[in-house]
Image 1: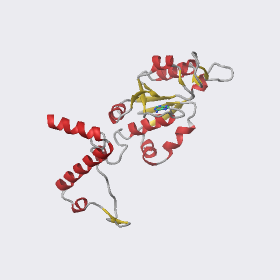
Image 2: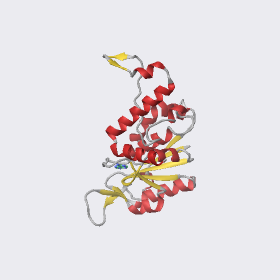
Image 3: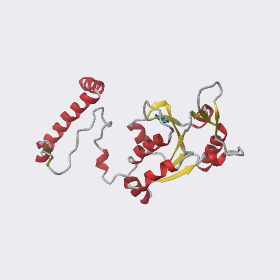
Image 4: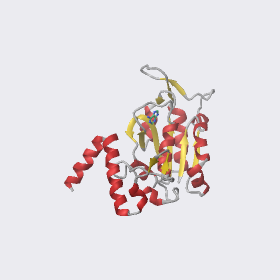
Length: 233
Ligand code: ADE
């Protein structure tokens, strides 16, 4: 699996792969990361990559030319590359997307800076367009990293223990039950006793009850939907 970040600012991204789980996964060749800078493709004598927008509006928009050429070169190199644009004007990225993208051989993330990307680039090259939430970042780099991280942990072998993927929030409409590590007592705060006793069926029912109460508190609409579908089945 290859991830390519199409960005003017690869420095913002690189450090994330220098430690922890993703570093180890790269050392095991489970995926590799490449960078493509649209500025390297600019035909402008000052390597300019942005301009003011037609129709007015504050801020600069990324020009089509450097991106057209960068993305053409990417497609020429690998016709199977799956090109994803990150922008707040898109469908929300969810866990199912992460699982689906983990099966691709090559995913490229195109990050916009300034006020956005010329729509013609998105029209021509986007296989998919994602937003990571209803807020505006200064650029798509952080959004690309969020998506890349969520995708990579679904690649076979990246998480040491594949069981960690089995019961996670968003695999069902319910939020995950809380976890506790050792010690049993910390600053006078205890761990639910059922967790300590090792009766797996009791632990399962307690976890379900805790999942439901977390969901009721944080996402009441989701719990209602979950209960409604359970009644139907
Ligand atoms: N670029 C800027 N804000 C963004 C967001 N919320 N999601 C994806 N890309 C973005």
